Every structure is written in structure tokens, then in C-alpha cells.
Image (cartoon, rainbow, N blue to C red; front, side):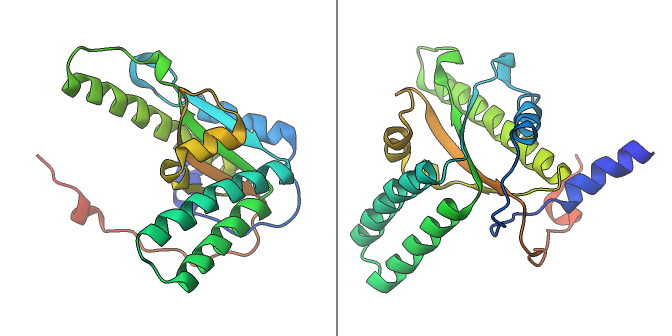
Length: 203
């Protein structure tokens, strides 16, 4: 019973943390968190996840500059107001540059099966993306269990080439998300969850 209670405490206690102290995260803790991510289930047990860990402030800032430049171009093309764009860019740059650790989570498609038809190939890619997402959830839960704060960000999906160029990633790697991680500062209010009967159908 104690094990079950501890598990549900971690799952229910986790929340997205976006504000961090300047205290660094030690290397052994990061290794434990990443090892937990690697224990996620995956399609065909191919383990298609790849992690790029950024602990250097200069590398994080360079990535932030590349990604927010793309954000600014895209929103300018959308015709959004300049002041709204500048505020969005500043917020995104601050979050990434100030977090002690950023972990870019990628999909390595070389592990995928290949099919001659589009529907099965699309399903194969989706299975790999689901596998990477499950590794990301393990990472978030492990960070919370370690007493750290973390937040999953989908922004690399909107700037994949900029991420790959800024980090020198293999061309085949597909950035799927990014986890900001560190010792949290403050406790944000918890966001409500939908009731179980609203999202569940018993068949």
C-alpha cells in the first residue's frame, strides 16, 4: 500500500513549473531522471527517443535566439500585432535562457519499420512519436520525484530546423519537445482536471 500511495502522490503532485531558482541540478540527478525516461515502453521496443541536455547558459541562449527568431517571423507573417509578438518572444527567450537545464527530446526515425503505403507508414511514425512522448512523461514524473520542477514545451515542433542547426543535431533526428528543468521557485496554482466521467466511456 505504501508503494501505491507513493506512486499516486508523484503522479497527482506533478505540475508544470516554469519558474526556477538559479541553483544548478547535479549531474547524477540528471542521469537518474534520464534513465527513468529510458524505461518507458516503446513500439517494437525500438526506443526511438534521443535526448540533448543543455546545462550551459550560452547554449540555451543560442537555442532561444534561434527559436524565437522563427517565432517572430511566423507571427509576423500571420499579421499579429508587433507588441504581442515582442511580448511572446521575450517570454519564450526568458524561460529557456533562465532555466538551469533544458532537455530537447527527439525522435530517431532510423529505428522505424518501412512500409510501401502511406497509411501504414504514418501509423508507424505515430507509434514512434507516442513512444517518445511516453519517455517524456517518465522524465517529468522522475523530475517531480526528485523534488525538481519541470515543464514540457512543444515549441521545437514549430522550429525543427532551427533546433537542429543550433544544436548540431543529426539531420534525421526530429525534435518533438523540450523539458525545462530545475529547482522550482514558488508553487503555481493547480489547474483543474476534467472529471473522470467526462473523459471516460465504459464499453
